Image 1 (cartoon, rainbow, N blue to C red):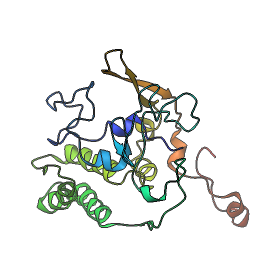
Image 2: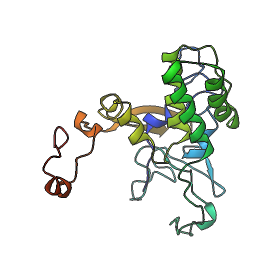
Image 3: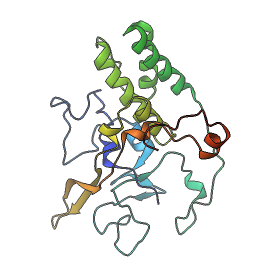
Image 4: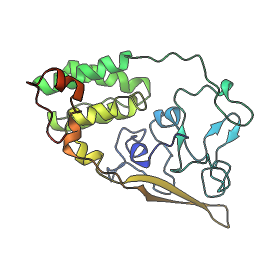
Length: 238
């Protein structure tokens, strides 16, 4: 089974455009999915979501988190993006679909431009236009008036959210050389307990530790290639 992480969920903004780390964002840890970026529910399955006409329960003992189900959610989340409910069998086995894999979509082109232009010469109207065109599609408010560093943070977060599960994040983080920041940290999960009065208690916990080494910023040169050309020098650490 595929399980999204709390680390990713935390990167989705509030509908007001503020990151949940902002004290003024109105984020409520005990109602964590209220007023969030609409892309959260388009990309992930979380507690309370509707799927095939059923309300998903990821709390302990819920229909998506029973201890007897080996395919239960391990982190409190599942994958929604790409999944066509028509191709799920009665036992919830995904038998395929007819969605083509898009290698590059327009949103990536816009985000590529925004990132490159901001890095080259800082914020300008064209950078904001590109970034905000992506944000507008999901109903997120336009950004403006940020310095280069703050805009860099928001562009990178936009890539994480907009392009989630599309095989970008691993390569983005490595080219930014931020693997020690994002990959050398514990993977988080959301533990949800249903109380006797039917209220829910949400607690973010560690799911598992992850280790990252700086050498992973570059992949090793295949040994076969080095044997063919002794002048090649293997990347550091391999």
